[in-house]
Image 1 (tube, rainbow, N blue to C red):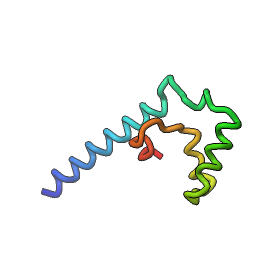
Image 2: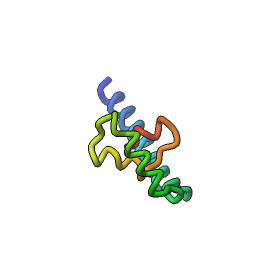
Image 3: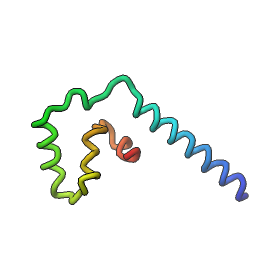
Image 4: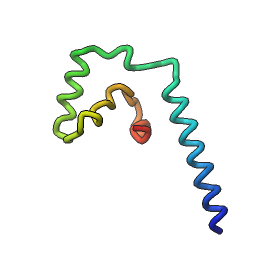
Length: 72
Protein backbone atom coordinates (compact mmCIF):
# COMPACT_ATOMS: atom_id res chain seq x y z
CA UNK A 1 0.00 0.00 0.00
CA UNK A 2 0.98 3.64 -0.23
CA UNK A 3 1.73 3.97 3.48
CA UNK A 4 4.05 0.94 3.42
CA UNK A 5 5.96 2.33 0.45
CA UNK A 6 6.28 5.76 2.07
CA UNK A 7 7.55 4.17 5.27
CA UNK A 8 10.09 2.10 3.30
CA UNK A 9 11.38 5.19 1.49
CA UNK A 10 11.63 7.05 4.79
CA UNK A 11 13.69 4.23 6.33
CA UNK A 12 16.00 4.18 3.30
CA UNK A 13 16.39 7.94 3.41
CA UNK A 14 17.25 7.86 7.11
CA UNK A 15 19.87 5.19 6.41
CA UNK A 16 21.46 7.25 3.63
CA UNK A 17 21.41 10.38 5.80
CA UNK A 18 23.06 8.54 8.70
CA UNK A 19 25.77 7.04 6.50
CA UNK A 20 26.47 10.39 4.82
CA UNK A 21 26.81 12.15 8.16
CA UNK A 22 29.08 9.41 9.52
CA UNK A 23 31.26 9.65 6.41
CA UNK A 24 31.59 13.42 6.69
CA UNK A 25 32.57 13.26 10.36
CA UNK A 26 35.07 10.39 10.21
CA UNK A 27 38.39 10.95 11.95
CA UNK A 28 40.25 10.06 8.77
CA UNK A 29 40.12 13.00 6.42
CA UNK A 30 41.98 12.17 3.19
CA UNK A 31 42.10 15.84 2.25
CA UNK A 32 44.80 16.33 4.89
CA UNK A 33 47.19 14.45 2.61
CA UNK A 34 46.48 16.48 -0.54
CA UNK A 35 49.11 18.71 -2.10
CA UNK A 36 48.68 21.76 -4.33
CA UNK A 37 50.23 19.83 -7.20
CA UNK A 38 47.89 16.88 -6.66
CA UNK A 39 44.79 19.08 -6.64
CA UNK A 40 45.99 20.86 -9.79
CA UNK A 41 46.47 17.48 -11.47
CA UNK A 42 43.00 16.36 -10.38
CA UNK A 43 41.32 19.51 -11.70
CA UNK A 44 43.11 19.17 -15.03
CA UNK A 45 42.16 15.50 -15.19
CA UNK A 46 38.50 16.38 -14.66
CA UNK A 47 38.42 18.93 -17.52
CA UNK A 48 37.24 16.43 -20.18
CA UNK A 49 34.11 15.81 -18.10
CA UNK A 50 32.96 19.45 -18.28
CA UNK A 51 32.33 19.82 -14.56
CA UNK A 52 31.42 23.19 -13.13
CA UNK A 53 33.66 24.82 -10.53
CA UNK A 54 31.37 23.53 -7.81
CA UNK A 55 31.50 20.06 -9.38
CA UNK A 56 35.26 20.08 -9.02
CA UNK A 57 34.85 20.54 -5.27
CA UNK A 58 34.68 16.75 -5.18
CA UNK A 59 38.40 17.08 -4.37
CA UNK A 60 37.39 18.30 -0.92
CA UNK A 61 35.58 15.04 -0.17
CA UNK A 62 38.21 12.79 -1.77
CA UNK A 63 35.90 9.80 -2.32
CA UNK A 64 37.72 6.48 -2.08
CA UNK A 65 34.86 4.25 -3.27
CA UNK A 66 32.40 4.72 -6.17
CA UNK A 67 29.45 4.63 -3.78
CA UNK A 68 30.82 7.72 -2.01
CA UNK A 69 30.14 9.73 -5.16
CA UNK A 70 26.40 9.45 -4.44
CA UNK A 71 26.92 11.57 -1.32
CA UNK A 72 28.17 14.33 -3.55
